[in-house]
Length: 57
Image (cartoon, rainbow, N blue to C red; front, top):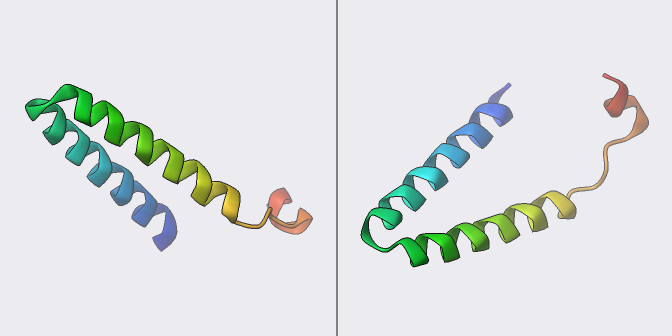
């Protein structure tokens, strides 16, 4: 139960930071958003795939 809340807080924090940067300089926000996307994909790919029992429930 705690994990989804932490993921949601992480996403909200990242979006807030990107919005703040976009208020100052839009190209920097786009670059940071791209980097954050790459990091998110790398994190997702680094986790082992769920077992069949976990995938069913």
